[in-house]
Image 1 (cartoon, rainbow, N blue to C red):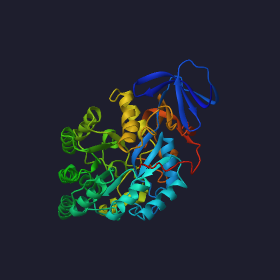
Image 2: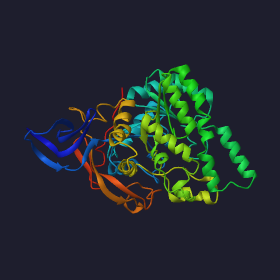
Image 3: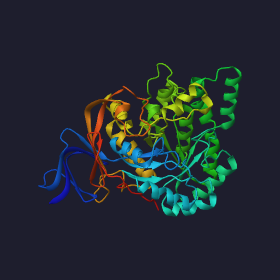
Image 4: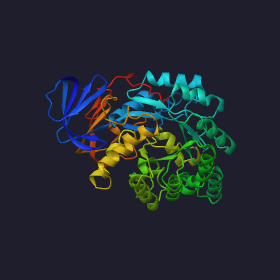
Length: 450
């Protein structure tokens, strides 16, 4: 037998369990898994002592393109993804223009296709209800609502804070059968906490971060959204499910059979250093309690959380550190797509998370929940040959000096990790090797979900 790429001697993930053997790739597809067959290959990679898994699907990345490309663009963001073992991304619609009409959505994915190093599907905004069906027919996998309304990235047409508009969007998205995600946010409570802190003279960057990540601000919005889900039958994607009471509401909804899926952002599980406040490192985690983090781990292990994603949200250093002078004008978000897999593999090494469960959470489940499976998220014969080779013993130090993301910094500066992707393979082509991206701009494709 002759194939284009042979990955030999690896421990290969299958949904029936781990197997020792060789993974065969012909063209862009998985051709088989064998243990003893003699195979000729144009290229062979020895994966002895390593694990071979389906490419990671990150369902929550902000690539800032078009409109904010001084922070990130589709090329730099998907290079970062490739370096981190991510072969498919789903980018978010708070761009300029917002992809909320069929014409804009087509332009958005055309721009992305010209730059992408990995495959992608772009979330659309349902802020123009009569365009939802047309956008779905193009192949959007999901729609996204920002319930929050403040400064960028929450001041675009993608922000829908009004309850009546959210309900209408749910009704229209429900007709497509696609998920609708919501960044939950109680604007009234948030604004009240800001006013109170301002009146007390305590509205510094730390206090602003605490209010931004206040569990009540998030969780108090969730019952309303679950009610709308029940009324409309929409497939509701509960974003930022990282607070204990929020998690419990989702757990109860799932137990009664509600159409709900939920993510957890990686930094709720493995936060950057929390010993002291640092505006770059932990402005998004300063409000998370130990109880919240433990609830996240429990939910990841018991299935309440369907998948882990990054909320990769690059901003320049200046856009965040301006919060030291004026907290209400600071940008919110940290980059993460480049190193989240290694951070989670480090937890695998500590025994906190089985490797097979991690593969479900970052590869299999997101592909299934967004209609990409088995083309993505599996190593079944005939599927896209999206593969990551892992060395669980490889150690490294995270540093902003070696990042592909345009913003050029990381909240995990200096943090040690153990467990790294050595090869990222997209549709049979090695696009990253030993941390170096060797793929081609524009090789990434739009993957429609019909």
